[in-house]
Length: 599
Image (cartoon, rainbow, N blue to C red; front, side):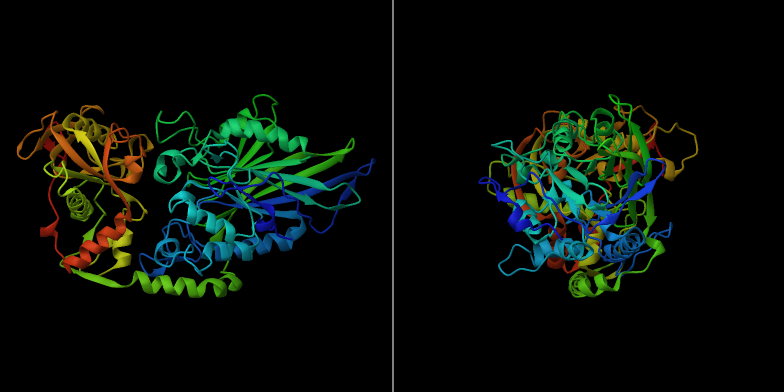
């Protein structure tokens, strides 16, 4: 039977947090295999896992208004995952399986935006979140919190939690005042085995410390997020002392050991492998957050020498991880003999008609919403070259941000300061076609639910900001051939951590070493004065330290709002009626090599 969340949780006075120390769920009896002379008893357990679903229920691209397709032939959606899960349960016996997720569930598509903002689940008599409905129907046992769970605020997250028939786990999501868990740290399921004692499986949920930076506006003073390693070291021995025969960690944290936020936090962002290496007593880790596919990664625990198996399924419900765990009963207890993992591909199966029927009405409402026409474009705008050429389509974002911030600061002491803005080339495939412009066209340009912040920066700080941003380009000597596919993403920096800055003029000399690339930096036709003060219109992710850009996180905040930048873009286009580059496009920067333009 499913865990009853309403009976299971106590509410914290500060955050309305559900705190649970254990949940036991009985499963139908399974036959234990008896082999060998000693009639040794064995048991096979299969743990299935998804992660970074990001609101993908069907194999549908809301931005293209068509079935999702990519060059690798991937398919997406929980309806496909449901089919894979049904197949595994049929093969292994549902009583011998566990279904988990490693977080980032309720943000990422127009579907999730719609039920957070347009027809919010928090409204009186509001709808059931489609992700809760789908995951309840599929029969998830437990889900770890992802950082994007906090993007719409704690109230939305708590309502989603209330609608789920499974616990949302976060052993390192603590109440900021009491430092007690604000969500259930773990979940325990007991598997009945005929002819042998039951097998007790504990699932420890860990989330990402970066939440403290990325969603500071929602969590500061309410929740705190210590490191995964230290919290795992605290909880795993407790789970073992409670009789757990198997310990599985569901961690919304990649395996690379790196952090995108530099030294802003004393905790590692992608620490799943470090948890395996440092904390004894873990058998397997379902990895999330990094959006990479890891069928199987074996990590040796430094203290015990034992192998811990990690697996990360591809995001957006494109893969399902499978951990096959073999146990043996000897000397009065169960012990894990082996763990092996692999991934199953969603493109190998069809949608589960049960899930399709359940979610079709929600899906259709969102399709209608995103296809609303809000204006007309005089020409096609695209992001295809935006990461290495100043593209008008990105100038649209910075123009909207400048206008919103200027209006917000009108009549204040900062009204006379120049406003500059940042924006990133999030997508390489976004296009606003000539002719009718819809909400989905604009949403594809700005795929994140970021909001707008105004910060106060000096010219010197802006220069440092640009130098850091320019590290995105691979150093390329003058005279050598330029391959645009190899020109960007130096040191694996993602596109969303490269920024345009509007209102200035500058060259990026990619023949120079990182830190010495910004040339001919001017404002208002003259060389930039390091003492000049600017109002910097910046998204909340960057304003809170996302990407570890210098100065911006610590800069004085002049203004902020909760309306998404994506919504501001739609409002701007709606008000204009016509989307014409002459109203927003400008050539602010170009790539050079030893002063000569690259393009």
